[in-house]
Length: 335
Image (cartoon, rainbow, N blue to C red; front, side):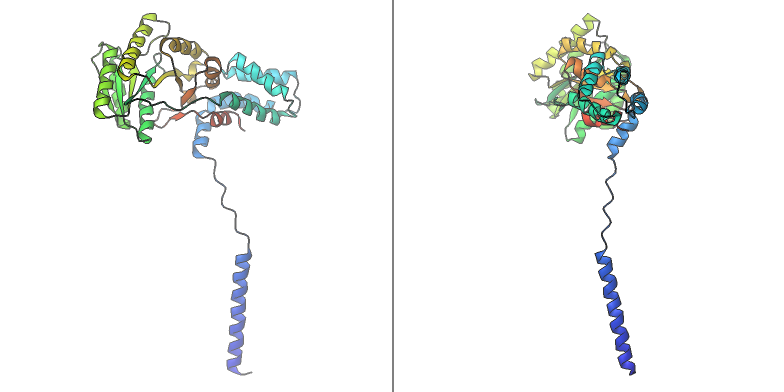
């Protein structure tokens, strides 16, 4: 056979082979894109709520694997919710609602329980109302709740959204309060206005408002002295601070009550007293990473009809997060 013809044949075969390979490769189904991982914030929330998650999930795990939904099943489900501090009334109502839908097995009961709790927490306004120029936010609570650190963290969150803030250190009774607030404020880059120890808290609140106005800040956040809700004279003083801010600004956009999540149901009484004194518009629940009583977030809303706006799940600057009912309930209940 002629050499040139042989070379031509080899060339044709090679071309055909290359075309065939390309065709096969193009015909192969593309690998599906890697499924999006569970959102990091959701995984993080599950970890941070591990104590409540363990308290609820540990008891519910075996219970909800059951195919026998008898009276003892429903009694134990109710007891588990009460132990997590969702409140006796809320626990009973929730279990009755789930039971009335006649779930076929424990897994369906878990799904219905999840949706019931999410439904109870839905529909409330959780936005921060920042009306005013500057807007005014008053933050109240008893001693030891994490109020001062929460204020700085809220200022940090506002800064991430492009808002400038001035903090008013109106806790003039505790000598270390001003220093603590300044330390945290420096971490998030906001200004602090303070007064001498023992000075009039209402005067500090006034100065903070005037400074925020002069500086063109968007928000002034006023810290107040931690006080027992049962001390009427201290609650009256808190009312004075609120009146001064109301007079200057025309309105107080938010009055946030900071509750320690580890106190569970005891926080409900605190919330009632503060709500009566200064008209609480939202709740911040701290220390939920260190308690098995995370259900108190549900109890606060159900019993007081005050929205939870933030939850604290750690000590870091980024560990105060907006409260999202679905994420919260799923982090507690999903296997």
